[in-house]
Amino acid sequence: WARHAPLILAIDALKVQRNAVILGHSYMPPEVYHGVSDIVGDSLQLALAARDVEAEVIVQAGVHFMAETSKVLNPGKTVLIPDASAGCSLAEAASLAEIEALRAAHPGAAVVCYVNTPAAIKAASDVCCTSANAVQVVEAMPGDTVIMTPDRHLAANVARETGKRVIPAGGACIVHERFAPEDLRAWREANPGATVIAHPECPPDVVDEADFAGSTAAMIGWLRARRPQSALLVTECSMAANIAAELPEVSLTRPCNLCPHMQKITLEKILACLHGMTGEVSVAPDLIAPARRAVERMIEIGR
Ligand code: 13P
Ligand code: SF4
Figure 1 (cartoon, rainbow, N blue to C red):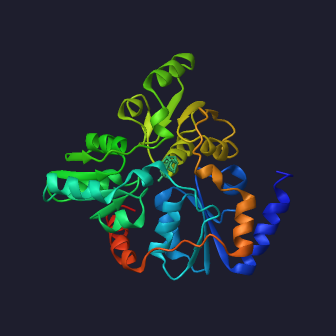
Figure 2: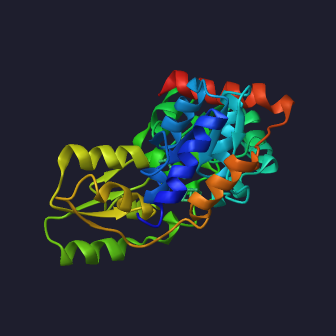
């Protein structure tokens, strides 16, 4: 922290000067999450927070789709991302052509897009969802068949919890698809009585091995409420670093899967973007209203 202190102080001063707030995702490194973020949370919590921001500038300490979502929900604000190349394998996988093909193959089925998508995909979907409310959103759709894009694992996990037939698109998260059920079983054997919690972007056979699956904020909430003696966190490993300080009595095992995109956001880049007001995120004006409709519909169903 001694190394980070001068940067944190400089960022704090610039935040006041620029009238800026920093929204930090659960996967930010601790010096960003605890050091400079004004609001932290999962994708849903950050979207809700972005909607209510009164400051002039939003710095998105997260990946590009999160910054776009902030812009869509609060278009009058200047939204900055410290590294514009901080993407997401799911957002890259989403395609308009695939949505069109799935709609043609399943006429009348609603298209639910994961929040991990570009604004153009949100605009072409009926509703958006996050890992925190995907089950509720899918349940709320009319008819018995729902199309879900782009995460095939989330789609399979949600399908099991709803009465709907869920037609998946073909994407996956490069961090969560690396986990394997054998590894979780081996860990449990080596740590009898310990708890396993996982993100629903993991394949279903991995989620089957977990005691709890939920969004990043839900996983943190679950640990806060139950405080198990030891837990395996089957997700991006920065999150464990962020909660370790808060829950010293919980022994956390974190298989070190880092998201290369989230890791691009550093204190140095936050300082540089606030200093030069660089990395402004824009969304094509004709996409803002339809993308916002999909996100607002999600918020009405499950916040
Ligand atoms: P959450 O919405 O659960 O924070 O997840 C976002 C994400 O990108 C997980 O990989
Ligand atoms: Fe995308 Fe996976 Fe990284 Fe989350 S962890 S931002 S889903 S690549």
